[in-house]
Length: 174
Image (cartoon, rainbow, N blue to C red; front, side, top):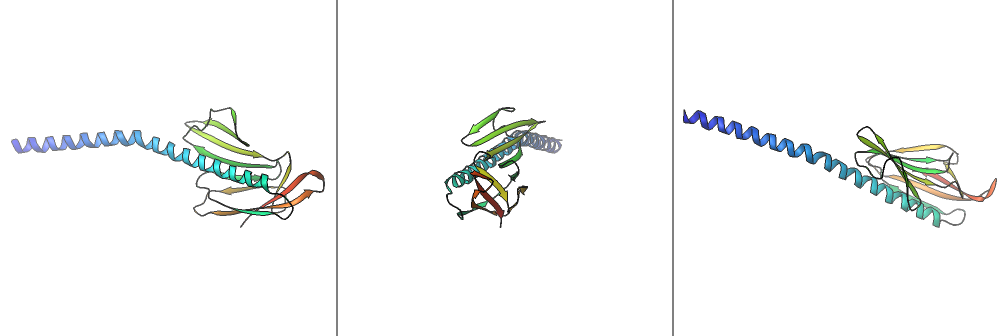
């Protein structure tokens, strides 16, 4: 009789331990995912700031810079049609207040609520003084996430002949 009671107690305590572990994991996992998303967004924002700072300091035709970029989540778009650089990702972390554009230096940050997640958009607008091209063409190019780094090259091609107030910046991937 005593042996049976010991086994029943052991099973009950084991089940209680599994329930407690399950409750802890169900609370901790979403928080860990939020923190990972926050880190990715902040790293992407720093990458965008570095690109912006370098572009603004590039002077003279023929000047070229190469960036090693790693996109762990989301995607980066070079929009030659609208003269924009955009980083987009979906996140469980609310980076800024949804529905409001926030300026972070030259970056415009926009967060949109999508169900239980958020769509985060970081945008650099160069329409004021630059003509952005991708491999010599005014087109949109999307750089998707990858486990490997990309080499993003930016070449200052000099003043735009059709608008002398704008500098042509040609992007390419190596």
